[in-house]
Image (cartoon, rainbow, N blue to C red; front, side, top):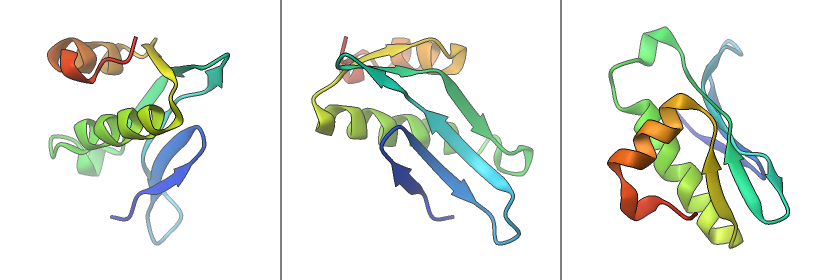
Amino acid sequence: MELQRERNQIFAVGDDGTLLCQVTFPEEDGVAVIDHTFVHESLRGQGVAGLLMREAVEAIRAQGWKLRATCSYAAGWLEKHPQEDLA
């Protein structure tokens, strides 16, 4: 699975065009909000959501943005990984 990176999202698409995973983080006034994470059922339980979160935090950090999470998975992940919080 190859992750694709855009300004406000990281995602992967299967050979057939199926969305396999995605994390979105729109930014406004220097604050990126992780508002959505998705992992296709065929990939669940394999650490893909955690990988997406690490990649998103890295991308947000590289832009110099602060971070906020409205997605319940992202908020929980940040609680378990306080060293990654960019608030």
